[in-house]
Image (cartoon, rainbow, N blue to C red):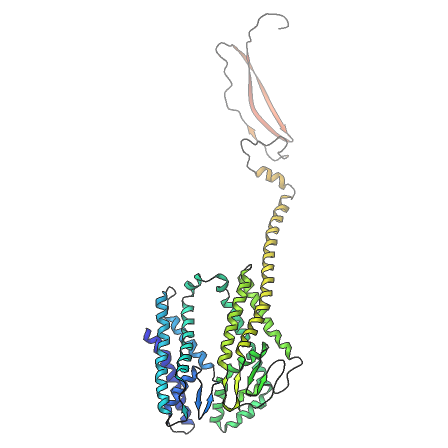
Length: 465
């Protein structure tokens, strides 16, 4: 299993690169000299290792293949990792996922050193090559293992950090999506320029190659557009693009770069800054709905920091040296800080408002429930019904007049025997008395009560007695 994790992504990648390079050479009617060197160079290029071809350094490499290999490695590591895996098992998976590509990189460096004798390809810095490969696969493997063990790992993470993951991912995709929309709009507006650049391909093969190259570099341009939307600067050689002002210059003849605005920025361009502001509001709303109270603010700041770091890494990967044309850079650290500022400020305010609204709604709901009970108790006849339904203890009898009119008819029968007079007394007879107690309109009969008559001792007999 560890061997599969170590070498399957690398093996599949090498096979795909070999197929692509051989097909390209055949279509271009070129011989296959230096094919293995080209394959090794392509392996390093996928991991963002700058290449030196004919004394010209190419550091601006497409990030689309890099994202693809990161996704493949992360998915493979997540598939073999159980949610309850121990830290030792997780580290073994990560170690295997990193060790295999490092072995392939060592072989590739040896192949490039051998092929440099027949093709104009210089050997890159070995330490730099190993470092980039290690970083890419460590990031991918760690992401996959963390995703697989998240049900267990998340229990040891504070709730406001755990709840920041999904809103942060949504905010990051929204920023990149906004950049993609801007590139698409510019591509449609400058379609004539893009078409003229495609015609320079000299035939179907050349046009197809320029199209594939433009597709590979599309994520790089999307990152640059996103950097400009947040208030940063996207610089391609002498050309710089910003919502506050553009600087013209020479661009490489890549059809995709026809989308770069050739006019002077200004006027309504700064209104585009409302886009990151709205994304920050969306982030604050999502965090405020997930977390209540003060933790909502911590959740927003955590998500904003995570998105800012991710944007910084993407900005760093998307730039580099472009030979004689200079440097392509998106001010990666400025991009990250601006992203954090927009999301953190707008998101924090929105989260506080949402949290306050939630607490106020809960308070009103409680008060509404109490008022509803009070209204029910004030309905006609409600007090009488409550008085009747309330349990009456033995020591708390219902006072006279408390029973409503016509509410009850009760008959109490005293079944106890009449008291028996002592033997020394003589029972003369009894008189039967019928007692009736009227409470309002209710008539309560209290059985039959016998009043005994007894002889009392007499001291003297007189007519008054």
